[in-house]
Image (cartoon, rainbow, N blue to C red; front, side):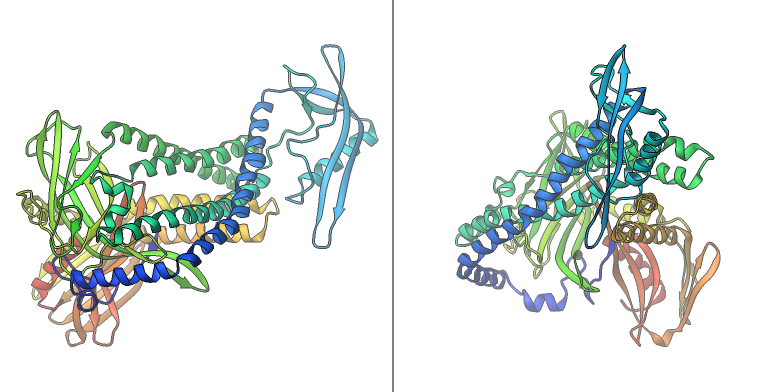
Length: 619
């Protein structure tokens, strides 16, 4: 999860920031801006094609390295290791054994060669396979120890143990160790090189396609028709992508965790070695968690089927309405079914920090409501309508910096567990919905839901002239438990790889990221915040496990206003959530947090309005 900074003024439902109204004041201004971008794109058409081919050619070697390492390095090793677990031990006599050293200008690599004889069923066989993998390397001291052991056995005339395939005695190996350090080293190439290469190839492939669609339809002033997923006004959710991602993570994580744990089982339990047990415990826990995620995502997709969103108007209208219907194969229970809907305009951009560029996302505008539920055949139909203020940015083609719109529909019934996220087209058409539906943001159930979301993370008490808030320990455990576990897995991988002489970059990347996630998660669940805000001013105390961490105090004359600020966003499966905090802004520019961990802009606005009304401070 990554924190994101908001603009100085963040719009709420029904109001756009002044700067945004100045830049994008009318649909005509938006259209002219889009046409200008289109003409510039056409002028660069030839250069764009060359750039696309250049990016594809540049990405191809990266993708080849990653995919090749997976197909010819990782998977064959796992396959051989798996089938060798059923091979039988047989005494063997060494004919020759040698540790070979290859010295280069920057490193020295080692490999082991051997020839040995063994008997199976009274017949003599000869083998030359020493380990699962062949070739020279310097990852850990596996090659050196194996070579020295075999050379010593040959000098002293001692037999060694070989592992023989009972169904084909011609197949044998002297050491069937998996070498987790080597596997992790290979996976580093798979993830880094393969991920970068395939991502760039995907961008090179989609860029011209998206560009052609956008260019062809700009002239007709219907850019939303350039995306096939929208053209028929039957929009699929992102659930199918979640299923693919979940199974990819589950297969990779389990392919690493279980063989590594089994291969080092005796070593970990001999003593036992508590650190090693903890490392493999974290790895196995992550493997099981990813598998559970994949299975649950698949069952959820199968249970509700291919859910489609139909917009009314189409597309959603800036300066008008965003309306939609959604059919679900769920029995109708009048008055007992509530579905929260969240419509968000988000800005995707790239930020450079410390010389490194990374993708970020910030919420420009957000509105929440509750959908109407109506019977439809054997199931139900959800209907919603939300007002979208003028002046907001329209949906833009996917690029390194662009605006996008997203609708999240979630059941408030824990037993139903329905959640879908849709990428939707929203443009400055000013159109109104044809359906006679009430504004979802005015649904009577919404106030109760907002109050519950606020009460889940804070205790608000009225005092003379103001309020007292207490945010208890553990209020953020649900959104931090996932990345704490992920951080523990990363730390475990780094600890395991530390004894395998893997590159320092690997240890820093995994250990540093994992450690930061664990420490950040611990702080999130182990701190409390007490605040008093009244006519005298503000007093805050932040404690960590009951111990005073920091406290602030400011008189009423120093308080300029109350404000809502975006803290961070999380994504767990299909669930995408943005968390907010409420701040007191002082006249010297300093900001003091009054409340945090508020899920959704509506809950933050609800608490802000309550605090402002009871204290009298402006917002």
